Length: 501
Image 1 (cartoon, helix red, strand yellow):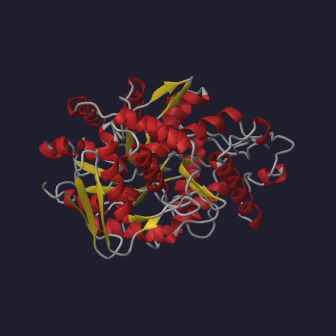
Image 2 (spheres, helix red, strand yellow):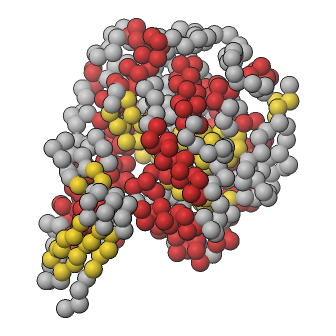
Image 3 (cartoon, rainbow, N blue to C red):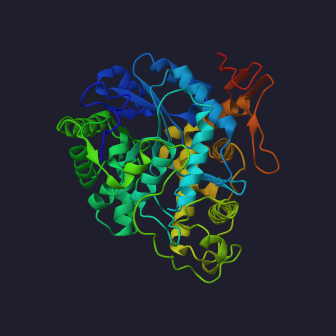
């Protein structure tokens, strides 16, 4: 059966290329708005910062703006935070967004916030959990396409019952959503698994791809990381070319989140992506026979992919804190059951504990997960905490290397806060920097502005938005005084006043 490929809501013209809007890119993009055709904003950045939200609303008058979620946790067996889904829906309406995207991943388990996207086990139960959560999120989102992004894997689950591409075929069949195909993530997963990237991407349901992400990465200690902070390597551009040659021109979103080079270097990479997508043939109609039965409706029967049932995986005989029998429930079975749902929730809770525990787990305590994978994932989360905190300290971040080194020491010595982790970490980093004569002037001002908007930290390290008015002054080294003033409400504007001497 021939299946028409979906038409993206941004596919008004061949060669549509966008970029993730970041403060470091703002001046150059506003000076040359024609360099890109649309922009993407991280939804959680708009939730955390009223200034970022106002900026997103302003740039929506220049380009189409795509909100991109990273914390909805569509893969959580325990469900999603509906308040977060409602806030995402409100942002989409505010920006008149043509499309919204989120990840097929989980960021919390067993009541613990992991702090970063964690890939799911490739099982039918995980696909069912995504479908259930997407249905719930849909009730809070406007009537625009929701695109689901494939995740990079740093931690592999033992005994995956499906291949990576077949898992995403199940996800799109069960949710009715199209894919935001992250080519960089596919490349990372292929290289780290020792398989051919072209073969891996060919196993995906390419007829259901509506947009593409591309980003740079780097190899560290034999592992390829999709960092969003390095140039896009030639093999990733080659994989992009293979994909668009098969599925035709689609919107391409170029991601860069750190270590920003001169804009001319980014513009050259954007131009390369634009040339690749413009050279693609008119988008063909693709064939995926195994999905034909699932395509007409997604209502009652929800049939599974055709083909033989995968073999039983080999699992470790015992596992501290998580019996093997619970992991073994995560297999290909045609119907969901309470036991399966409970097993997935338990596995995710265990993973969250392994990744966020303040003390490094002993190698024997992580089985049947690979100890090296767990250690690597924990290190990535530590780095991610610093990356999330530093944008909340814009003055201190002007000392980029010193601030990053100090931030790494602070988060390593502090357990993860249960709520508003980036804010709590930023306050810790600012407090430490205030004791450094080189960093103190900037750190004190950044800390004052954060204190104007947040209360805490509490005994568990958490902070919360400040609802009441705030007025306070700080004396900087050298005697200069600054004041911060905020009105009623968590989203009230904070004014910084520096009296003339």
